[in-house]
Length: 530
Image 1 (cartoon, rainbow, N blue to C red):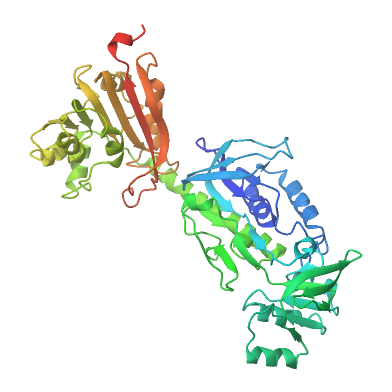
Image 2 (cartoon, rainbow, N blue to C red; image 1 turned 90 degrees about the vertical axis):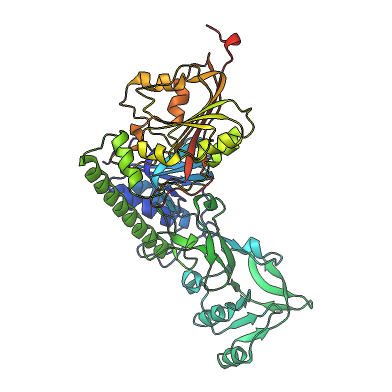
């Protein structure tokens, strides 16, 4: 089995319907760790039976899912009965937070956040029932939608087709195959002369009065009540429903829906294999294809699962190749060569996190570590700070010289040649790589530069498992969070230690969409407890 220590699972499947369980089955058989998060609301739950599924025709849809869950028990697939309340992250490290399910304490994980390298969205869609009295209560029984799913059971009976828009003409034409006794209710909407001619030629009656009620006797649909007080007897009602993809939480991942070709609702856009427009996320079933029957959604889930596995295999080969390549020494020469690759390495704009957290501080002494081409140091100097910009690259420092008279520029490795203790009121480190393999005293001496009452601001890329830079894994470096954990609480007050979305786009070709941020204030000397 593939091992990956940064995440809870290789893949999170959101939704435990036929598409979701099928994707989980394919991935489980590929020896992937899979987590299925399911809130127990499949689209076809109101139906007593499902049809058109080879080997399972006329089976209860809930029994079908129960059997599907049983099939997964032999694999490394965990099903959590819970509602997803938040999604985040990026390819390689997605997160899903759940609220749990009070109906099933056995599997509920209230408020827990799970992580995975990939996500498969199989949340389905919500059918939007017309506002007709009594219709919702008969939905899935004698008020139906799909002729392939339910037509055989009501063949040759009196079937009404209720218009919900232009696509309903096609819908009624389909239903004519299952019964000659068909009535089309325009519900007050328009009908072209051409469509009237077609319906008349095929013996389809047309009723233009608005439908107001579904009338039932002895638990059977008897008739439709009209706005003029009249009734039209029918045994079943077919409705081409409007719908909306269950996508409320997906915007946080960068996913948006698109209008479906029928004009009846919106769906997630996917390619032929279920891949969405966001790297690392696939979708299958009705959330992407509202016309997919159970067997079609099952096939789509299997296809998506196979392609998710293929993407993980490709990633693992890339990781293996990168791991065998020699890693450079991250010394001054390395950074000099990096800066020489272009006349201007960075945008020239100050980091927005610096602006956010430093603009309210009283100016004093500031040290900008990894000052690069000088934008952050200049921003501080413009606001009255006495600034020292320090970078290990002589090329970077030479570019920055002369930008501002209030900045002292140093080409220096502060991990081996530190500044004096307590010599600055603000120490800023933006995306400054400190290897964990380096000497421990180097990091400690760097942090000790901050004077009592001073502020430490450290910003780093949120680790993206699978992404390597210059041969290094993100886990090879100290993170703002690990630095926060190393601070003595008797000497430091940590005010911010969290992950936030990046305020500006990352460099092209990188997967970073969020930052880890540490803000800590050194306790003034007079109140330090020893």
